[in-house]
Image (cartoon, rainbow, N blue to C red; front, side, top):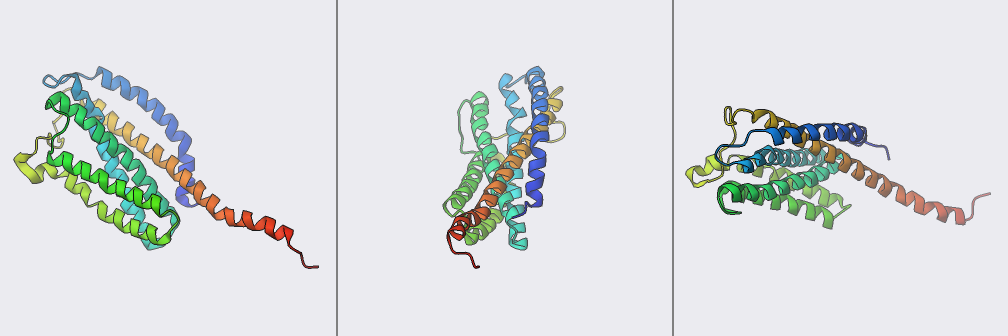
Length: 242
């Protein structure tokens, strides 16, 4: 079995992405610590530099899950199925961080940990959609039929992303979650740490994705080589033609 393009790319990105992430994380931490505090929310507002970035990383993961699934159905190449699975796993990690950081911010601003606000509710729904995807994959590992069904599921699940992003606009005044950031939404001195946070979190996403793809590639290689290893001793014990 030969390594696919994605497998080789993941292996090549492992070390450079790690060093870049370590360097950028230090700069990111300094930028957040020295960023000005919001006049109304205080220090709790600095979750802004983490929370939206994790949300976009989750969107990216779930979008790549749909892309990988579509390519797998089209090309019938297992490397795209591995991309879909790895992207869903990393996407769920960042979606979990969104769900964890959101209530901390809500507690500091709304005075309560949770509200069945449209954005929060759809985010939780999005998390459950892809958690179900991972459960499906774990219970049917190695099945081509299950991989195809999961590909269709992953493509359909991506429709929840625009619903999540535009939930505030769709539900109008019934939403208490802040509106999506636009031009001029950030105060003075907040733009740089916010942008740096986006870059750092997305770099962390690609590093984790590369490591997860590399692991899936190694598992696929071992699964491909195992029958040959099993047949080797049996052939050695049999009688060879003279």
